[in-house]
Length: 380
Image (cartoon, rainbow, N blue to C red; front, side, top):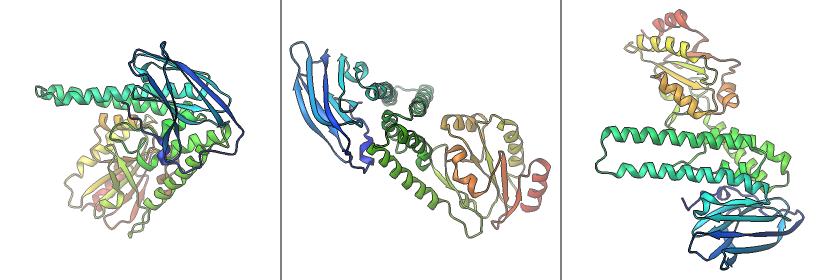
């Protein structure tokens, strides 16, 4: 994957701050490829451009020297043999970058803590994306059986969620680094969001709070704060009061499709809050499945709109699939920061609200026989 997804297109901050600046020296060696030219690219908020070039000597060595580089690290790319290697450079650093054979897969970097952290994320992410491309390419085989196709789907899905888990782990474990900022904006093929749309705000906020301590003068901090403000505004707009008088929700299902609570108007709806992460959902969901089945053919339709208060998309999806939950399953993946909890003043989990066909909330935290008695009345 030669073309990387850059987070800089999403930023609006001025790249160069009024910090003390100084020289940066970059040197190293590339072997195992025919290309002779190495380029240094500067990445600004809305553009990126080559600012210097070098020719490898007979042994594959090259060298760059930059002047006036800010003390707060900023993003550059080394381009060689059609591949980009991202670096965070700060004034005063002497950086050594070397590679043998496949550039991105094998490069090493010394002399820059942020660039070394970035390497740990970037190489793993690119390798994972390449594995996904390889699996996807096998679908084009004319001789592929349905069994083989299902096996490929399973393999692709497992690899996809493995990459996502590792990306989240890296962001959380290195939240105070600019490498985590870079990781926030990387997307797998076909993805628009990091995890789940505007619910990604929890991860942006986590990194921004940490960066405020480590790099308070970084322009990336202001970019993150601006992104968080836009996400919060969109979340606020999506949580409006319906004509019936109850707070509406619009959250994504396990396939990423937005589903509004108000889209179930005219049905009796159980708004149910739960968490796969708590590990106590199996029994309650099993009981609810029996209730759901009992009222499947009731004169007035009954539906469950179940909100997962979780942060791990793979864990949530696995729970929904393993428990074979037949109703509407949604989440914003913000965990305890979910705006849905505040809208319904949910203080503990599990919790539920029963809404009749006119849109009135007629019950709260009712389970078992009490729930069935109420449904007997409402679904006649």
